[in-house]
Every structure is written in C-alpha cells, then in structure tokens.
Length: 199
Image 1 (cartoon, rainbow, N blue to C red):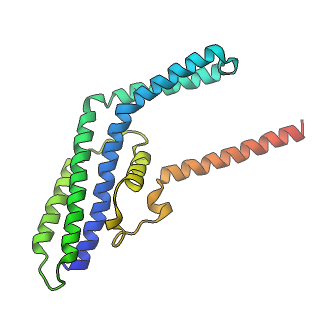
Image 2: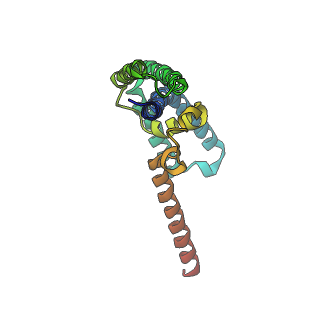
Image 3: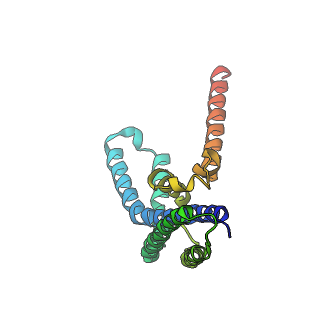
C-alpha cells in the first residue's frame, strides 16, 4: 500500500472509530445520568404544579408520566452500562493510536516500505471491530455527534477526511426532526391565523 492510500484509510477508520468511541460513551452517559435528571424534573414539576395553577392540568401531567416512563427504558441498560464505558475508553485509545500512526506514516519518505505500519493499522482496526457493542440507546447518535465534533480533537482527520456541515456534523435524524417540527409550527400558526380571521 502506498503512503497516500494508507493515510486516507487511517483517516477514514479514525473517523469511524472515534465516532464509535463517542457513541459508546454517549450511551453510558445517558444511562448513567438521564434517570436522575428525569426524577429531579418530575419532582420539580410536581411541586410547581401545587403552587402554579397553570401547571395543574391533565395534558401536562400525562406528558410528565410518559417522560417518567423513560426511566424504565434506561433501567434495561443498567446492568451493562459499565461495558459501554470500557469499550468507549478502549476505542478512544485506539483512536489516539491511529492518530500517532497517521503522523508516523506521514513523516516517512514516500519510497520507504509501509508494511510494518500497515500491519499495526490492521491490528488496531481488527480490535476495534471485535469489541464494539451494536445495541446503543435512543438519541446516543445526537449526543455522540456533539461529543465528537465539539469535544474531541479531530483536526488530524481533516486533511484526508474533510467534514461537511450537513452530511457529517448534523445527524440525519436531527435534520429530519427539525424539518418536520418547522412544518408543524408553520401549519399550526397558519391554522391558528385562519381560525382567528374566519371564526
């Protein structure tokens, strides 16, 4: 394999492995923290409903019960949550090793042999593919995008793996959700306007 192809391959795998690491850590964070936040918000809402009459209605209470039910969903991950943390940490280490390998390949002369570095790369790649957990929690994609694109150091990837805003940095599901919310708001506003004009 020549130098440019190996660099491109390492950068592509670096992106995939770095994102997978963040997704595992996002699942761990959500499972670890969300039940506590839901409990705090539910309690706060219940207390406020006692003193603020506008909060004391059936629709808000039903919505709160639905959100509170999510705690049962998170509890199904409680027994395996530490596995997500361990895999995420190991994938982060592999991501860092790939960065070092990338710079090592980049510093070598074009005429040099890259067989030893390619072998190290394949070893890291095989390990990353063997340890990943396929089942991830709801919304871990969105949180992983935040963790990868806003928290992680990923500048070394940009040379061979450039990122686009809409294709890479924003999850497709978030784009579609935003699109449908805007349509719903526009139609709701239009419906309210028409009902107000034509009683």
